[in-house]
Every structure is written in C-alpha cells, then in structure tokens.
Amino acid sequence: MRKDCKAYVRSCHKCQIVNRRTANAYGLLQQLPIPSTPWEIVSADHIVCLPQTRNGNTNMLVQIDHATRYVIATPSASLAAHTVTDALYHNIILRYGPPSMYLSDRGTAFTARHTRRFLQKYGITQSTTPPYSPQANSIVERANGIIVSTLKKMIDQNPNKWDELLPNASLAINTTEQNSIKKSPFYLLHGAEAANNVYETHLENKKRFDLHRRSHSFTAGDLVLYDWPKKGDHKLSPIFKGPFVIVRPVGAVCYEFKSTTQQNKFIKVVHARTTSSSLFKTRIANHRGR
Image (cartoon, rainbow, N blue to C red; front, top):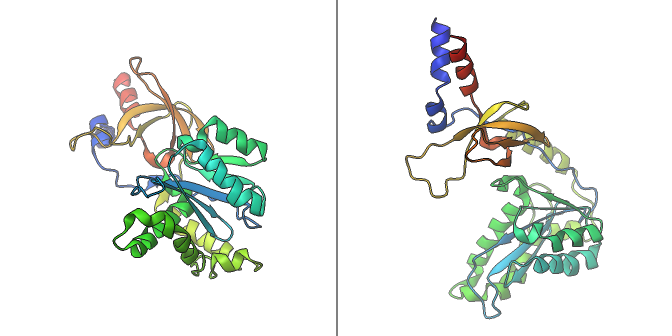
C-alpha cells in the first residue's frame, strides 16, 4: 500500500510540470572528433545587434578552427546567407582549403539553401546544433565572449568603431596562449604541431561535463516532459510541458517527439537535456488497472 501511494504521488502530472528538476539533466557529452589538421573542423556563429558603424555593420560572423583555436571575425551589415559563404570562401577556403566539417546553430543564414549548396559544392559536411543548445557549439560560444570582452576594452568612448578595431582584437586573441592547448592559435597555425595535451584536455572536459548529467535510454512510445522555451510565459507558468510521445532517437542525445493531443499536432526534435521522463503513463496504467 505504501509503495502504491508513493508511486501515485510521484506520478502527479501537475507536480512534474511545475516543480523544478533536481536531478541531473539527461544527455551525456557527445564530443566531436579531434581534428588532425588545422581548419579540418570549423565552428561558426553570429554576434548580432552590435552598435551600427559608419560602414553600416551591426553583426559579426565568428569562425574558429577546432585544432588551433584560431579565430577569424568578419563584420557584416546583414545576416544574409551570402555573407556566411563569402566569409568562408575568402577567409578560409582560399587560404587553407575547404574544411571537412562546418558546425553552426540553426540560424537561417546557415541553413539557407544557398549555404547548403555552397557547402555541398566544396564537399563540406554541415553539422547543426539542437535548438536552444549553445553549449553544443561551445568553442565558438566562448570565442564570442572573448571577442566582445576584448572589444569593450578597446573601444573606449567610440563603440561605433568596433569593426575598425576588430582586426586588432582578433590578433590579440590569436596571439594569446590557450589553456586547452598551452600554445597560442597563431603559433599553432604557422608551422608548429598541436600540443600533446589536447587529447587529455578533451577527455577531462567530457569527464567534468558528465558529472552533472545522467545516461538516458528513451524508446519509441515513452512519455516525456519538455522544458519549453519560456517565451510569453509568466512567472507562474509550469517549468515543463507535456507529456509528449517519443517517436524515435535522432543521433546519440536527441529525440523526435510528437504531441499527444489531436488539437495541437506537431513533431519536434529536441536534446535529451531539455527532457524529463514522465511517470504520467504509469499513473494512467495504475488507474486503469483498478
């Protein structure tokens, strides 16, 4: 009896969508392969809504090499797809050859047909991160923060000149020793071998990350709750929404799920980190069995 009561309380649907999650999030760290040569894997991201400069630039495309951590930042006046392909072509492909993989978020500039066709033309594999998961492209996200911080120190009282100071900021970053590789990106890119401790740092990062995560094994038909982005929600809104039905796994840590109601049909791909297993199904089964 005690066991049944405890299971009934734990399976409360309202409690599951309102209470904050206390257990570690699902989804162990999935690391990219370690590149063997510079510019083999490139991550890209936009820094947007910057002060408009005299040249009309309000955005910045940041591209970083995974092997050397070398950063190339390009100012732009728009987020059109051609600004991405132009920067990739002139700053990377013409200098170092096409990379094997190009990693970005799902912004329209990266997922546009023009960009996809451009990458296919040069045999570049496109990889995109799950929605609302900037940590999946953490190398470029960290670079973004360093670039913004460096520019803040340089612009003084002239924020509208950030694009003129961007080459200086990039040089300062590329000539600074990186903790993960114990060398500067500039040094590694110009003839030196990659530091021997990159692999150990790679493993240490995964070990540290996985301390705060749990393994997961959702299967088709499982019910899950989803930590829906809080756009338009109020402070008393539930933390989770659902339950939703798992359709199939997508890769190692992503799942495709669908709604359980006929009124609002949809299918969505999400990272396991944003999900929580639902005991609602167990509760329904218990009720039916009585």
